[in-house]
Length: 232
Image (cartoon, rainbow, N blue to C red; front, side):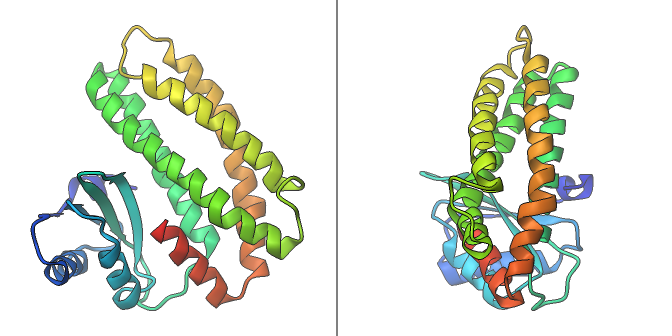
């Protein structure tokens, strides 16, 4: 996620009939160039908006929830450099999310370094939400699809190792999230520990699980899996 996307945010109010809300978001999205995003803020789950995008802007967007209820939902809808109707791959979609999360984590620690601890905590909360969601859709959707195609069980092969690493990542994440807003905390050592696990973990996913899943699936199957991941 680049600085241009962070600087260009279009908010859509929550108190609109669903078809009007969907149209407003589509129109705002169409005005954005690739690399920028629309931010949807709504008091109801935005599933109908996602369905509309998947039907009418297929392949053109990334769908990224940053807060989910119970009173308000925030979603970033990012414009991709792609033709309408383009089929997605797991590698493209999930590697993009890795890069987005890396940028958020870096921004949080940059805020901490300049002494803005409230901003650091706020940015890290968005990062933590996104990483937890990323882990959830991998374990609930991606890993079972990969295991089914590759003939692995959930307790053997690369995904078994990655599930264990997810537990370690989540433990590190919880500790950092609790400490990053405290200027007196020794959070840098915690961050180093997270990077040791997460860096190698992401490399294995991007070099083994993501391309392995893509290779084992038809283009239609890959695209359908990405759509399910967006909807989780």
